[in-house]
Length: 104
Image (cartoon, rainbow, N blue to C red; front, side, top):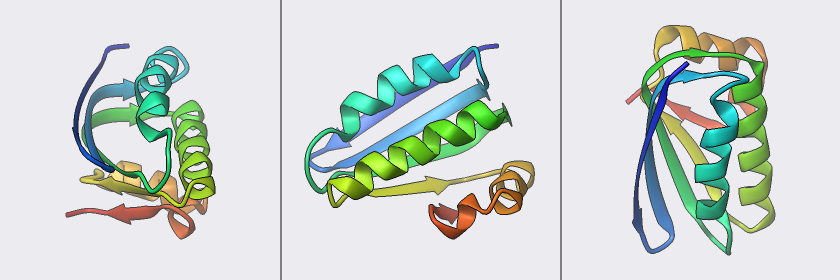
């Protein structure tokens, strides 16, 4: 139940690298870190999930909430470096149809 969050911000562009598990125990901490970053207009948030070993529905809900907040303020959310398992989770739930997901 560990999570590590590193972020770099350059004007409206924000890159966040998440490592560990995103679940009911760690999602509140992740939310606490990410929500303040996406306040304001035209923010572009890119989240690398390369080192995320597990995610449950709490994590999915968190990313949907961030997507909605960014969209309201003409911003963008992009998820990158997903494992096949995480990519499949987003595909099965249909979230990959609304949130930009890249395996690059």
